[in-house]
Image (cartoon, rainbow, N blue to C red):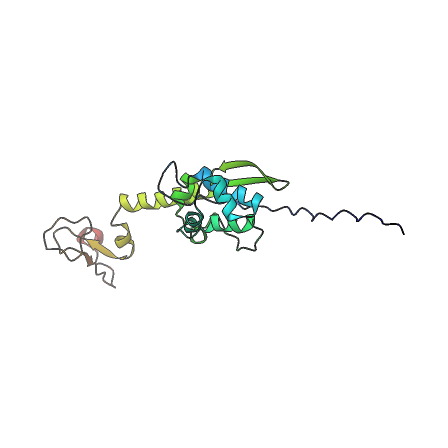
Length: 204
């Protein structure tokens, strides 16, 4: 009886995983802490090893420290990239949304986005990209703040059409009378429903 050799085991097809871009988690600046480079390295190595313990050993951080980083405020994007690296289903995080990321526009602009590039299941590159959407949002917020500082009474003036403002009246904010105020209390200007009578000069 002939014995044929067993066929070689079939290798599982390589599944290409795309790791979403994310903003680094805000942490205190420490050389031995979770720097931006170490956060990106953690995600890339995690996609290679599929093991949190092995990844922490390679990047030189503790396992409990990694899970604490994942739970910090503003870590929604980092957590989504973590799950994507492990091949888990995750909720997509819109990096242009302050509500989704938990990060203000100013931080997202200054920190930028982190992109982990994988090829054939191996980490090949880590890139930092500017967040132009956050820049536009931040500039719009600065513009609104500058407008409010330039004319602090504009809002009260606009909300009281038909009023005239006179110095020396009581403060609109309830302060003591006579105190200096950029926004004095409004006084209603009554307008007569009848047209004014013509003067002697107009009659001639």
